[in-house]
Image 1 (cartoon, rainbow, N blue to C red):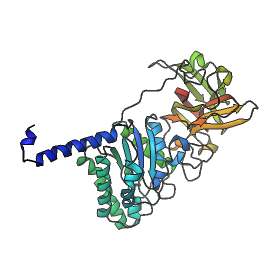
Image 2 (image 1 turned 60 degrees about the vertical axis):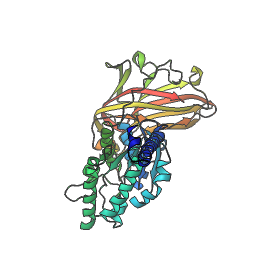
Image 3 (image 1 turned 90 degrees about the vertical axis):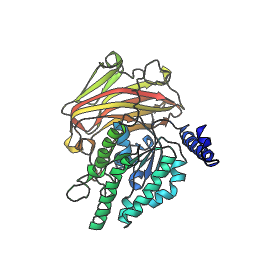
Image 4 (image 1 turned 120 degrees about the vertical axis):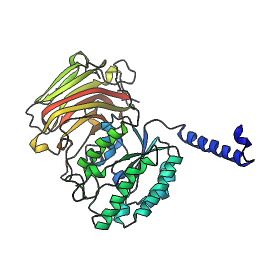
Length: 419
């Protein structure tokens, strides 16, 4: 009431403006789910694809290996939902500013993960031009009530002149200092993760073509990004699927009764099923010893349609946590070293239908396998969704590791469900 006694007319306008501004921010977030993400940037962003739907094992050099976001969400326990990949090939920050309203802010999300400036530097744009565009972009994101995580620019061989290196250094210093003047902004310094600090160029094995991330580079960025997001985004509780859950489609999702119904997949791998000490759930511990086959070995389960847990037309998906240590890749399969999870449907006539699967693939000569940098780790795998076909008779579930000669893999929190 006191504010209305300040200069007549002006105070009322000020109050109304504040209310309208707050209402606009609240309204933009009212229907936004927590931990929802839009990726925004250039072709490095495009390489993330559209989330679990692109994790297909048939193409060994797909975005499942080269996209930092797929790695980040796996390391973060799959607690984020990708609303949209708004990457644009060859775009500068000016291009991003021109389409942020239609391609980003028109869609609801809690987070915008922003990556850019690579093409600006390659095209000779100045530090002032780049930062002016980024300032306008960040203003729009903030005014829309979104949280933002901004990358420093990645190293690249496409800008290695002294002048270009100077713009890159100026830009990265500016980005790193931004949280001091923009409370709530989160910055991920990816340049220091990927660069050769003596030359400023991409470190060995981190770039696919001198610019875009290799699977190794994507894994490094994804792991660091997950640790950063862990400090600012809420964790989702582990999904523990019960046999009596009405969406569960596996007779023994928790490996109960010493793995009843589960079979060993391949020779040289020994599964041991046991209870977890910290919660009401079980785990499967797979020990690999002297394996020479490059096939994926682990454990498998067959679920028949007669069990009544699924039917044609159901949309299914699965997730599981993989923790590994002491992993040694088979010498002939160093580029095929990754955890896998598959659901394959078989029809009444014994023909196989479509397969839903998840694995991190890195088998081309230009990339590195998951074990090249990390001998131990913890990821949550998530298959893409699949609609069960007509005349489906049974489902084959398989979990394990491809290309592991020796090591230990613990699988827990396995869930397979229909939506």
